[in-house]
Image 1: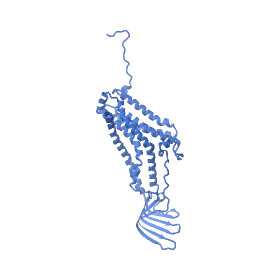
Image 2: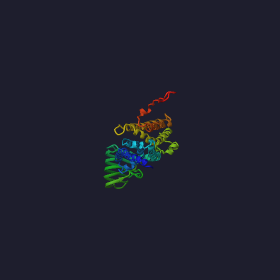
Image 3: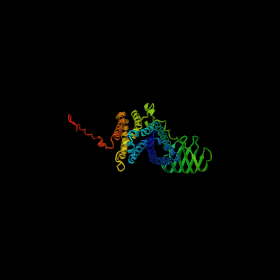
Image 4: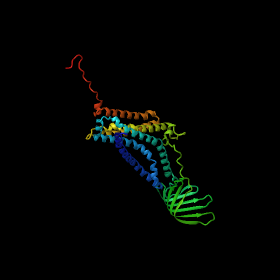
Length: 390
């Protein structure tokens, strides 16, 4: 790369990296707090929070990369403009289109990464997130008890607790009676009991503190044992597994979407939703270099050192508007109300046309405003025929 290309790439890369980090942190912290609350309520180890949050990173990258790239190009070109570096570059005979080479190259590299991310990483990470949250939150449905009430869980198990909190995960003054198939009985009492699930097989385990275990059999003397801590696995079924990947169109890879999803789609997934999901991912990837090009002329809107940078505000508004329009278009295409190609690719064509129009103004406008550039030029007067010029 030439010196100018490397310089522009550095001016774009560092704002992009900083913006990407800020957006990822802003999106992740709010979700991390909810994940930690869910994990603590369910009695799972707190170390699972970071593992679960890592499954959401590909999803957040799909949101953060386009916004970070657009704002990085916009800010970098605006700094070149306000510091008069752009004027020096243009006065040296270098056109605006030449400045797009490193920006387009960088955006194309990001587009390839985004294709891999939305096409393959996101479906697998989304499935891993849903499966893990299912194991954590659905493992103790059998022990959603009412305080002070004897509950017969099945024909062998009776459970009671004076106080119940955190959705049945924590029980105070716990009592249970288990009857074996041979007729023997086991009675367990404890000051506190916590319901957890084993990460290996998802089996339910109740960890009790300060209690007594009483066992009696047919014709045998009852035996009593005191304990400080006791882990007991009740005779109940754990939660059903989440199942294989493919519960919805968002868990399909691009190859699977191109083939129409799985061999048998879930009951709540239609072929129109599968097609809309595939085209929405492709539109998002194709929009990345177009957004980078659009940011260049928007950065030149407004005056130089003392002018108002209304191109920055306009660019952010256009970015938000475009994301919302694509989202609405995907919803209409998923319902089958509008053809997929018309609903999702029309906003992309409009964005491409807008980027081409504004880039042409930046290249040919000669510093004039957009209104002055669009105004037709008056025709030049020509001397009358047969009149000699003095």
